[in-house]
Image (cartoon, rainbow over all chains, first blue to last red; front, side, top):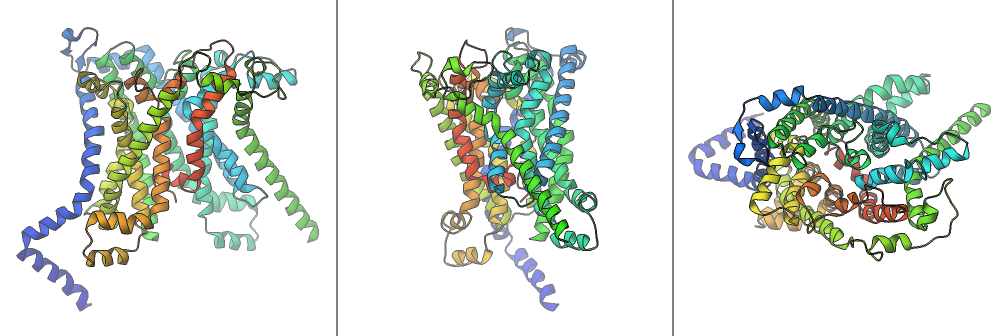
Length: 312
Length: 280
């Protein structure tokens, strides 16, 4: 007890007598961190500040001389523009549908893979593969090789059973984009949930089984509560990645047929329409939306993280 | 009792089969893509599909430019440069940072860690326009080094998080011993920390490589003819060009190959990287 109380005291007196050297040491501790920190602030925070500033200007790149301050006009225009409002709605629909479906499928697959069976490693590898196809390549695969109404694989297989030959992308464009994303993101959810399943307390489950609990009871009362935070984490990380999705929308429908989501709209409004001010305002709105999701995501990551730190 | 054992056994065999079936269904599009890439264009575009058509390398020859189309080599080289150099830069910046967040932590190190994570949640489109304008005014448009810098910033938070958790596993006593022997920080990082944390660092590098190789939005907006990357090259296949399925499949497969290889190599650490270190 005495040792623990005197040690900090000795530390403070040393700091009092040799102040500059203590400050030097603090900087020496910080030094390895600084390059990464400065780099991140310069490359990610400064452009965002610039976006914020530009969003208050009426600025079309084709008429640079006409640039002037307009206050919140861009925001008013973005929020009242029917196309943009539609793209907000599309973003929400796309994100929620893809996250929910891939989460449910991922959970089912994780439960299947959590038990022992011959070739488990091979099945795991097969299931991860879709996530490891370059996103543009995956989108091209779905667009041309699977969905093509004349010679795509889907209609080819339907042909065998005498089914209809629909034009998938024209008939259900958003669903077509969503299906391709679900295919890519289900493995991601499966991996996170599998890690969750494997961190369960096996003794507790054994004890429940000895007490006569069935598979279903164990799943509902032990597994699901344990998985809750892994499900949240999967949902939030999936949302963060899929809200930003550009590749699938750009490749499969080129933003047409009502599938333009916010990232695509922002891209289009400055890359094709050269409306810098409007694009920035839309960008700021995307950020505000993500901050809402991110706040929850950070909280979940933080709670899992603290648990890991305290366990270590 | 034995009847019940048989029932349990039958159930587990059944579920194993269901798992296999699910694996095959998810893999089917990729298997079909691989098969189609070895078919002639005429055999690739049939309905019903021709499973047993004769195999040929024509799709690959077409893709690599023998048919008079643009050669994919410059794009592949650009992608390799952007991914490899940005990954090396990420490691160079993340290793010391992770050291200051785990082995000799600064005050409030968790806050710093979460600052890094929060930058990852800022959508890329939000900073795209100023970066585009900056590049345009400084003549950096269509320059692969601009992508190197951007990909470094894109992956740095992931790398810091992953490495922080790997370095936390390095025993402090070993580092103290090196310091007592008079080793300075770069030496400690290179000679003591790096060898112990090597598997983790390798996995981090592979994951950063995958993300850089896959990236489309920045590359699409900021590059043109000179610095175009492999995903941008692939966007050339968005509009149909007659019979070109075998070529599309060959192109998609060749360009995905590095990612598939890196991903399978880092399989065990993949979750940790994708969940930014939250799940082990």
